Length: 182
Image 1 (cartoon, rainbow, N blue to C red):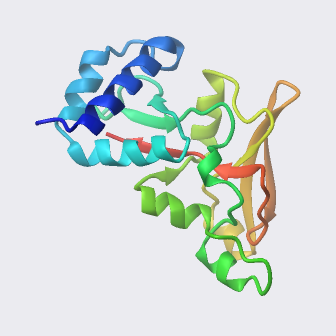
Image 2: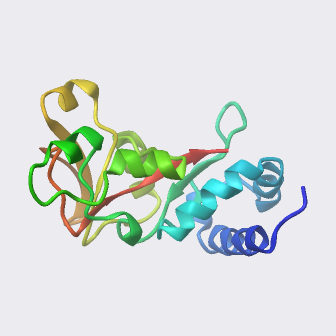
């Protein structure tokens, strides 16, 4: 694959982040990650969007059983370009006043990523400390969503907490983190 200057710059940032945080992906070599990415230009486009919205994507964990490599948003706080969002499109359109500009589920789909699950969020928190001042919407089970709720997480007092809120809620300090499997 022929790399554009944008892709070359992104790969350089990803490698620097990968090298700077080895605890996030023990047992993986950058050469393996690079080979996977250069074979998948669509993944580079998604990672570029993750980066542009403040996600600071990095590899988390070892390669998955199928050989896939997982990238999670690793910005210290919930990505700045993805805050002040309610949970999903139905919640956004149901607001009669003060509608947010978007929703976490819609923006994740636009970027090409999935919201982290609670298990993925806890996996991320096991390799660093994130959301010490902000919080992040996470993928919410359908039964909770059907009742008008959604889940979010953060880290306070050295502990990862999972909370609930109405889906129409949005706050300046709450965004979302996503995952991309490559």
